[in-house]
Amino acid sequence: MSCRSLLQASRYIYPSTRSCAFPSKRAVCLRFGARSMEGQKKVAMEVVKGKEEAAADVSLKQLSKKLDDFAQERDWEKHHSPRNLLLALVGEVGELSELFMWKGEVPRGLPGWDEAEKEHLGEELSDVLLYLVRLSDMCGVDLGDAALKKIVKNAVKYPAPSKSA
Image (tube, rainbow, N blue to C red; front, top):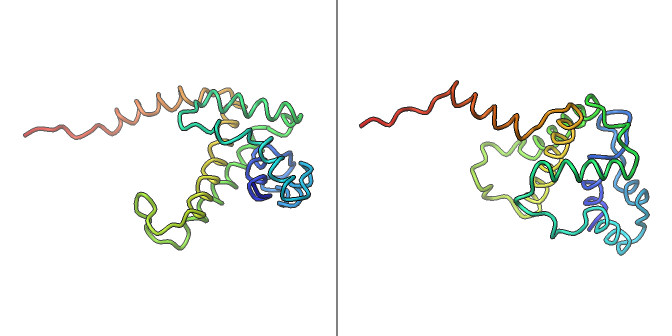
């Protein structure tokens, strides 16, 4: 795993007093003690604990627990105020939007995107999700419950057209 991947893995919990003031790729590698490519790979595996844990059916509660553990192990909770997390979330949404900028309308399935672009998209979507989960936790909001309630509200507000023959 490269320094870029390490940066992505550490970005959502890296202590910072300013929004979007994230360390450079080199700084992340040095922070985690990775000076060589082999060192980077070793550190990356420690950071993300292997791809086998990246299951598609992971719950919001599991993500929340992992984020909380990660922040506690590094004594980074003090940097996770709702304001800081919101500003970081907005920064990540901006990075996500940059991937679509100048591409025109993008059809479902992203035809024409290469694997590197799709991987980068996955990283940016993950950054947004992780900040959102952490922000909801710091605000005392059960995100899963709130999302289900919102779906019900939307169904009432925007009823499906009746299927009459």
